Length: 499
Image (cartoon, rainbow, N blue to C red; front, top):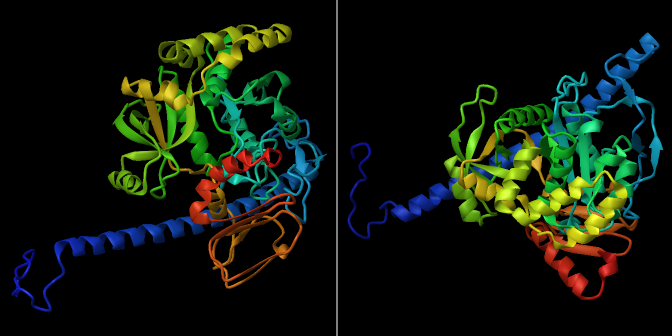
């Protein structure tokens, strides 16, 4: 018998000789990859259960509050009542038939804070307002057309205005609900284009008029966040701002709020702070953050320096990132002092800095604002905040990251949207009226019956079928990231009116 750890020797060509080393490693790698897939499936099932439980808990909580209100015949005292927020009417069909949100109707008076229905802490989501951070301002950039979700998402009605889970709140409304405990309506700012201002005001009636900053045209995230920083720094020189996209989905409100609070503490020490999401799989659709050394702050024990930012990798590179345990997904969330961000812009992008400061100087004077915007805005550089300041500042040790454990998804394509929707085993996900979808021997995929027509599928797996009144999209989940290319080709073919 061979000694432990020593491979036995066999004559050349002997049938029972062990497989070669390369073959053995291939088998090990295949086993590991299979385990990753199984773990990802389990995580997905857990996420779906959390979403289902969140909805049930929210109903229970609202029922308890309603009963308490009746028993006291007065306000519960938990929060000062605010003007009623809109409730989306329940619809039998998908709300995307006309590419508009369903009609809004005023509901009963309710607290100004509503736990996000996309989280899993509906019963413990701090309804007492104790999470308020003095001097912290929320910035919500609401831009982009969500072209990878076309034809569901359109330029005139992008994904942040859509209720993609049919839970009664659009993505921007869920973002508002989630962040309100940390600031207030008075300290929450939305940056959006002129084509979306009206819809945003309709969906967020508590948003103050002077806190909706309308940018004349899209200039990417640095100009949008930089404009908010410049305006808020003028209004409050000590402001700490946090930028959070309007169209991302988050589960785990408790962990999210805690991570943001920790990031604020680090930002006060003159850092640009991002929040790193623990990756659940080697995604090629997200950028990555390489973790550096711990900062050792008592009030922010998890904070680390950012070693570097990595662009969206290929599958092999993504798997290698995950294997090291030193990488987090880059969710594009940034927290910093408004004045510190302006200092970084002045150092790395001085022309952009100067233009935004000139605009901010007259922002609250509407007549002067328009004149300055007409003069300056078109000349501003179009660049993401990562490339403009985050990457060069990280190279100088001025960017920190708070690793977080909450669930996150940017809903970047139909494949990721499908993962967020419940489904029966070996059945496609359905976003809309399930009575309009009939399948036989169909597994996986996602179907959006948005035209009111019956959709029937036989023997096809993992398809993406989006049937709108004016457009039909058919592709596969594997190629859903490429829908953006199809949008470009549709535009070039003269169908701009459908985009």
